[in-house]
Length: 139
Image 1 (cartoon, one colour):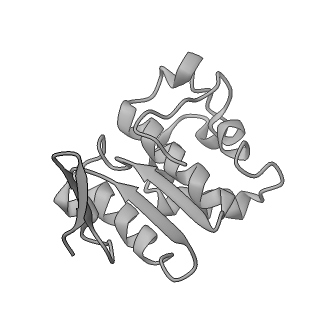
Image 2 (image 1 turned 45 degrees about the horizontal axis):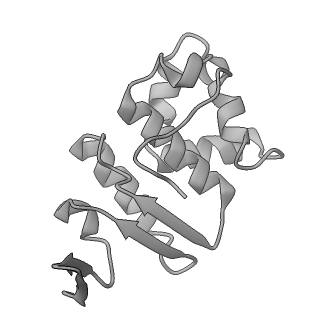
């Protein structure tokens, strides 16, 4: 599950990712971060994946934390991913990269995506809308 708010521990970025899969290889971690469009940002940090994020990830922006949360989900490799506004704090370029990665996994996973953004919902096979206390399929 990936929520709007990603909680990080006062550890390194790598340690925060390994929560999803403790035995992950460096290659698996980097691949998950590329899908979440956060790998290049991490490499730009002085200590890369060994950079400490501070208490509750305070040294990172909300969007950077959100992309690390998405990387955790990609790294975990679960057959079901529940995403609550997964790109709400991400710019349109990073959103496109993330949505392309999610769309590429649709045949292998059940992805439930909750969003108000039409651009985010563009990858959905089915779209449901809640209105006046009821739900209806709109696509």
